[in-house]
Image (tube, rainbow, N blue to C red; front, side):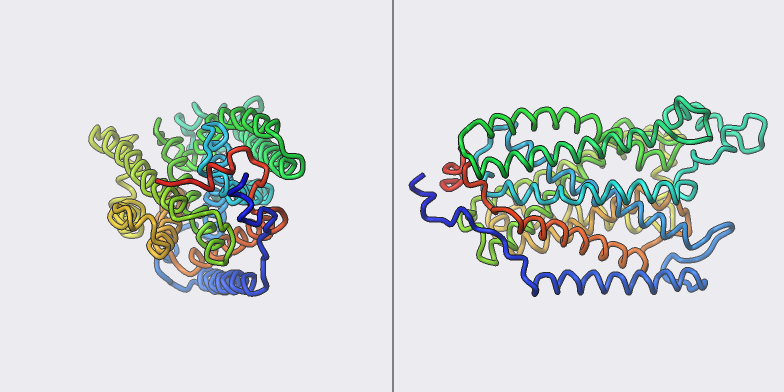
Length: 427
């Protein structure tokens, strides 16, 4: 590779003290806001949307926030692995220099697995109405025929209302296989650096294809389990796609921000404005894809006006707490990226991309906030200190895990057979 000799292919990211300091400061600010938010909620302080209701306890809001961020950052982590696998399945060469950035997001998956399981075991009754045994008691006053009909999906083969073994097994299997595939792809990619040849590329491509098939199924079912089942009476056949689209745009934005950060720090010399442009096109295109899914789901349900379906949107649109956030969601996740990234130059301009991608990450957190809080907290929800603090804590922790592991190996897969194509990438 004659062109490759111009670059340091053994370059590693130096996770400096100054970068760690910024992350710790953001995490510290988030922790302080979170503590203040908890104190306000526990002492009856009324921040924005923090009014107390009958039977409401502040821990419910804490659990809802944990669940929002667990699901959201789990999605960003698995999207890193998904996008990595897509490059191999599609035999893409342009993205070779960015593969390690994509894969770095997956290091959060083992942590996400523990956080999800622990949160569910601690907070399941405060998050999911179907976990209460009384809804399955046909002789009781609170028997729910609809939830009873769906009970086997959560509890099989055990009795409904006891231990949701089928639900837990699915969660463990999904995380177990996601972590397995991530470790497999990561190990093969690192071994390729040591031994070279095309064998590793073919092997990674095979494992990527297997992972993508499993991900296609598991991502949809996990969306039903972790998010849609919060509103147990409601369902949408588009919901798996909707959650995937939200995860994908957020994950692409994180990959773009890390790439620009590394480039500005003097790394990834072979990454040029054409690579940045392609990342910008992905963010632009899948922001529109997310909007298409959002509008398709909303229009078909709202226009049909079937009560058991339209209630999901009505309780959000008509709410004093959540109504305005629907418009924030659409502005940050569609209007902003559509208008700002429409031109070719904007997709090649780091400042535009950094601003838009940061706002998209916030915007899709709002999207998951709207999926989770109305069904768990009702009118006791909202965005306050607790929500902002929790997001900053999770974001800082995610950044630390991704960057610290990115620093342990070469930034560039130096023996990738398509590396030359990435050097000469031009659009």
